Length: 218
Image (cartoon, rainbow, N blue to C red; front, side, top):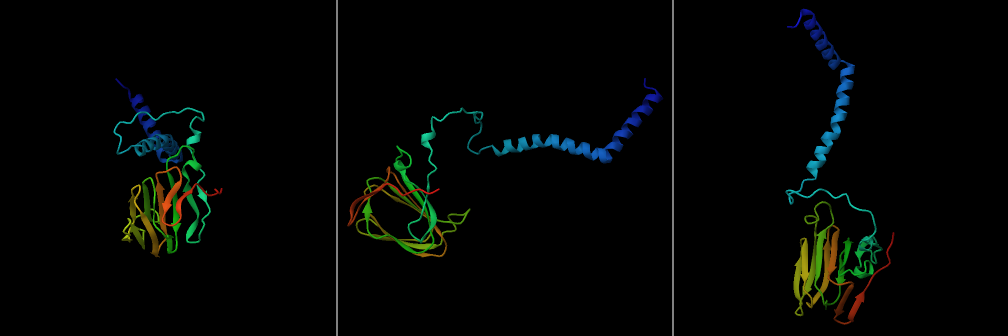
């Protein structure tokens, strides 16, 4: 059975805690508690950000090992000077086997800022090729395309007009081009991906041609 003295002590203790919580000391304590809780909250947020709509129960994130066994599979030599003022420089190019021995593709990224006859005659490749015509304004590379491109396909020179963001698939052996970038009201991001170790093709008047690379810049 508690005494009156005990009750008075409990009341005094409650009043003291209440006073501290509303004073400067209380603010300091609350701040400290908030800081202690911050890592927990941040951790929870990071964990939430790590969730993926594609993986319901992914394995634990690996700690990894040290070493250079796979260094030869990375290339950071992409930057090149533009060879024409219609392409904003620098441009980015992955020159396939010239940049990474054993690579089976070559690919470039160029930002065209003016109309330009990109190809003057038809040619074909022994491998598939993909051409990407995109806008150049982030984040909407599709909606920011605003231009007109005249493109010819096949030995009969079937004419096509490109007026929206487009991916063009060119099967191996199919004649394609000329290509005329007739109108650009905004910069256009152009990318060509060829499934070959380096660019090559058989041209209408020049015959077989291959292009293995350009000097890289820092």
